[in-house]
Picture 1 (cartoon, rainbow, N blue to C red):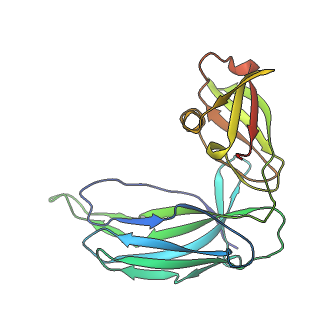
Picture 2 (picture 1 turned 60 degrees about the vertical axis):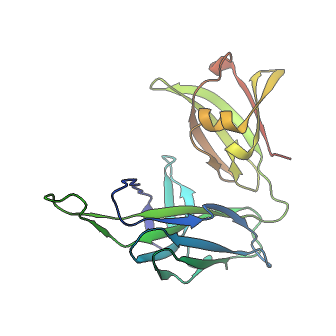
Length: 235
């Protein structure tokens, strides 16, 4: 299987004539049964036809904690894998898990919507530029009764930045902004809102049986080095 290191460039120039959206960007399905598939929707909001290649990849993190993608055609079926969407129109995409239905821990995937190269001739007198646009959606396959179990390993600094080292000892992925956080000194923990977590912690996904370090901005009034952290699944 071909290993691909995730490289994503996002362009938001308003002069470009090609634009589209994909929904949902984050989703969860089951490994078996009627909930093992979902419909995704692509909308072409431009004035030109949109050509897309849609491919599934297994999401994992390498030793440098960089996201890495591995082709996952044996696990995820995409129908149709290529589409042409006319201006102002929608296209539905069926995404189905066809891997091992008896998995005990969750698996995470990227369903990548890859647009054909776009010729940008917006600026007269300048050389045209070929650009490639991608939407990388997150698809989680979660078995019944699986759950994350997050442990705060340590808080440390590196090159003047603060980091939280977290381990997921559970059987399900965790999206940190969807977990319930309490921080403070041991024996005196305060609940932190999801908005505060998103603004203070860089990064969100923690896979089962994985340890990752997340850069964070210290919370007001709490000494980072002595900070106690409790992260539990939202009820």
